[in-house]
Amino acid sequence: MTKERRTYEDACGMAHALDLLGERWALIVLRELMLGPKRFSELRTDIPGISANVLTQRLEGLEETGLLVRRKLPPPSNAQVYQLTEWGYEVEPIGQALGRWATRSPLHDPTAPISAVSVLLSFRTMLNAARAEGLDARIGFRFGAYSYLGHLTPEDFPIARGDDAGADVTFAGDPRALAGAVYGGVPLAALEAAGALAVSGDRALAERFLTLFPLPPKIG
Amino acid sequence: MTKERRTYEDACGMAHALDLLGERWALIVLRELMLGPKRFSELRTDIPGISANVLTQRLEGLEETGLLVRRKLPPPSNAQVYQLTEWGYEVEPIGQALGRWATRSPLHDPTAPISAVSVLLSFRTMLNAARAEGLDARIGFRFGAYSYLGHLTPEDFPIARGDDAGADVTFAGDPRALAGAVYGGVPLAALEAAGALAVSGDRALAERFLTLFPLPPKIG
DNA sequence: CGGCATCCGGGAAGATACTG
DNA sequence: CAGTATCTTCCCGGATGCCG
Image 1 (cartoon, each protein chain N blue to C red):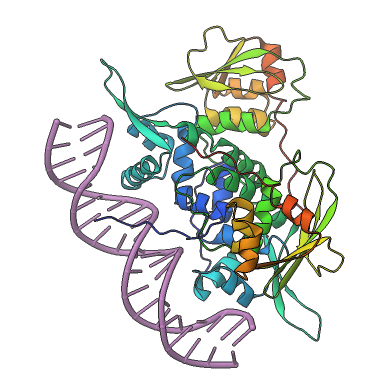
Image 2 (tube, protein in one colour):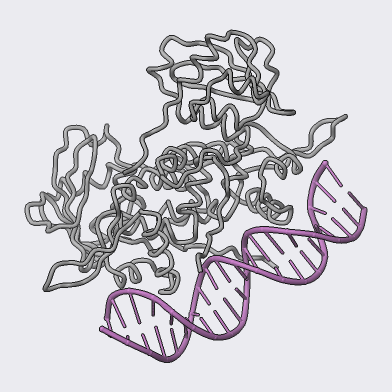
């Protein structure tokens, strides 16, 4: 009955990390929970390509190893959500190292679909302290049903789910469009004209925001 | 004929990294090449558990994506070796992030088998600058047929294959024993008595060396 | 609808044997 | 020594269905 998982049986820390989160989709699931708990159906829609079957297995496995917990929200919502443990949140630097490295790949396709969480996490990863010199701003984001609020300083950019009321500037629309503006150099005006992105609040701040996240050079 | 690899089709950098090196054994293979080229049979014996079949596939895949190259050594050896590209070597920070994170796991078994390269890489990962204050030493290692020489300073600890002639101190024996001395607190004298490890050169330096690599605290 | 369990097909991984 | 060939096993992905 006890299904023994396949392990590397290697004392190397890296190998053990792969034992814990090397299965397909595991890191993607953790990524989607990195900015706050989500329910099963949210994970399904935010992770295109994963099957309900596999998502169930991953959530079970990640719960067993202590990377996340199921939590029952208080009434009236009563919904069950999956929430990272503190240790689970500490996976973020790994994702950042992976992301930093992989964006240098010539095979990387930045125009592929991207989730709201991915874009926001990429900001935390790529924030350039020098370019953000002197900044202290609240940045709001609205992607469909999700609202996020971030506190931007040169040193850090913590982001959490929450109302964007009180934000100095808010971006609303499609994560892909925001990624295009920040990383693809697509002019804000074009995205607004196309209805893919809406900006409200301090427009100069918005324009500056788009320049804060330089990508590392491609290899070659 | 063109075998299309299974991808996440996700613009997220982390997801693309998993496309490139998320397959089973891929990171382990890169790890074993991280301190210098190796031949097929060396990889097979240094990676217990991998089958020749899978090793061939991984080497092919990693070559296709530009992480390693096959190189023919000049006569008279004439042997073929696999060598990381510059981009391949840049995977090391990812392995370090994974290793640092996973050693905090309660499930991590530090007594499992460990390869020579893993132990040496762990030193680079865990080196504590404060504890190495003022050090500038050559550390030699001999594990079976492999010889490595490292240049230890508080800032860094580059290690490469090479003769340990000129080392201030040399450890020779079993990687597992060395790991036990550094991370398990096993007394050097006990390991020497058991014939698992031999130390030659500056003994005080050897004793100090063992204290330079503190492990992060376990979770809980 | 959310959260599974179940069944099935395809493909990757594992073990062993074999070849130049 | 450096792989290839073959066979089996297991995991992944998709579909369906159950049950609160």
